[in-house]
Image (tube, rainbow, N blue to C red):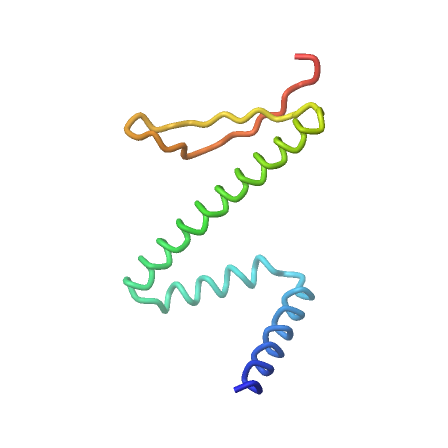
Length: 108
C-alpha cells in the first residue's frame, strides 16, 4: 500500500512541475475545462456548479476572516486601518452577500 502512495506523490509532483513550467496556463485550463464540461452529464454539471458556488463562498468567507484578523492586529498595534468594508444585503434576507473594500484617501 505504501508504494501506491509513493507513486501518487511522484505523479502529483510531476504534474505540479509541469504546471509550474507551463507558460499558457489559462489556455490549458480553459481547454481542459471545456473538454470535461462537454463530456460530463447534466447531473455532473449540476454538481460541478454547486461545488463551484460552495468553493467561491468559502473563499470569500476566508478572505473576510483574514481581513478581520488583520484589522484587529492593526488596531492592537495602534496603526491606522486603511480600508473600510461595506456589506450589501438583499432586501429579502439578512445574510451579507458581497463586500466591497474601498481604500480611503488619507486626510478624509
